[in-house]
Length: 122
Image (cartoon, rainbow, N blue to C red; front, side):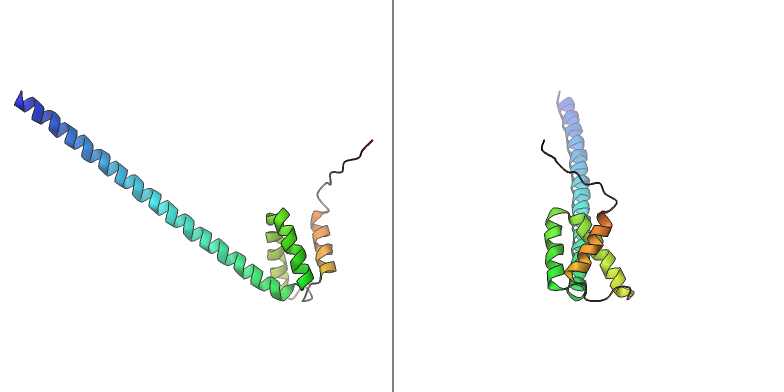
């Protein structure tokens, strides 16, 4: 009877240690994934900050204001416009600073391919 109890105790200890090892590796994987996500987020924030810094040079205050309002509605479009403007400014293909009217033209050119939905009341 004593040998059977010690045998089951040994099995329980083995199972317990295996489970503890599994939990430890799982926690390590989660910590690594979280650290990687934080690094990616920091890089993304740094890129956004760099774009915003370049927009202070490229755009007039009115144009920056329009772009920030557009960012509230469509952040993806705003990011692509900022990237495009930054590239154009770096290659000297656009007159700096871009005013509000020029930005309107750029935005309307980007949205020409999209269909507008209008609601008519009858």
